[in-house]
View 1 (cartoon, rainbow, N blue to C red):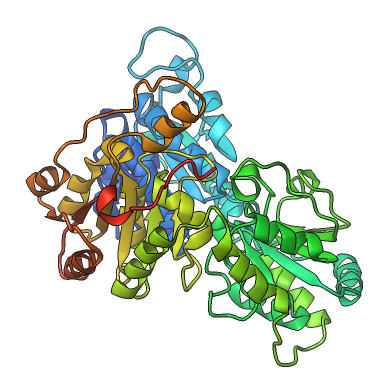
View 2 (tube, one colour; view 1 turned 135 degrees about the vertical axis):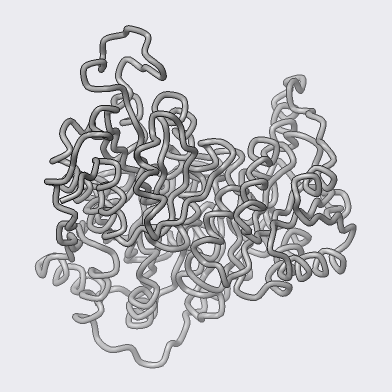
Length: 539
């Protein structure tokens, strides 16, 4: 048998787990990971910064449903990726981060070795479901099995595996290349389902809340909603689970007063895969959500069932399997006769003070120009309105960084990952001029890899929303008026196509033209050209 080292065996095992893309920047400490990668079927994409690698992996995972994978050097390579890991952790996004670390005999010695940290694993553990230091090549199949068990059968999130330099190069000829059998997620218990069925059938005005944990269960969610004839409220990460055309789809956001009123009028609420966190339920900072209804919660994580809002019935199980099992014990649906409260709530959403008609016109233009659009948002003014105004037509068709971790610079690299996961769909990044300057360089990676995303840079001359918050708090604005580069010229210099439309018609033309390119397209929008009504201070 020819010798094979641990780095090469790792690549073989990843292929067995159906990994087809890895994001990373090679370094001296990870050279041996690339020995196996070069001869594998796995595509490697080189970002321009490790933060970009993490955000690309995040976007890839959100669209594909598979874990995004990163290869990173020790020390600064890994610490650069901790912000994306934080975002993925907050939103329960599967991500496998493989890094190097100092040789075993150097760990914890503090002797000034390259990239040395006192305890790298302990540092990154704060942004992971678990972090493991591989001390023997023999451990590799079992540790990978643990990682993929998290992705498939637990609340997902980042997993970090660090491999000491002397283990990456160690002989692994004796280590099996066969993956462990997949872990299947647990479904709800029969006892819990019976209790839920009894309570749901007693409801006069039931309502369903769907969170990101239900993202893989659109069919099962729709069936249960129709069986109960229950309105469906969604969080950001559940947008599109029930398409806006469905008569039971409420839309909006549970942060809005109109949607809160609907929930407060319900007598039974079924919540699936949602943590009831602030950024979904109190984005407008008006106070905690108070439910008068009896609450049934379904979540794959037992600890989540004990956080934020106390349920009447707590069901620990995978959302898709548990909803399918619940549907099997509920009576078949007759024709859907949407309660009047659905139409009333939709109308009330449009009457909200926080609803902005010009942003709606902008969102409508995006969707009409690019059917089947995947829209990737950053923390920028239009995405705050998108929380309650943008309605994708399918699951995994919208996500952003404005909730959860709330990071900046996310949308550009995340859109590149999303496009690799769904190459036939039009993918658009929506990012502000301030946050674009965090990761604009990743467009060079898109050019090199031939990833044809469209990036809309929403230019409102600096950190506009923060500036308005300072003014509202009677704080003299400092550090928020940052000058913007010429985004069109900068994009063209990097090899991208670029446009600067001044109205909706020319925006639509630019969006449609971008679909014919094989490199990224940058579209810079001056906010004043599209928004005339007051915007900002949305909270």
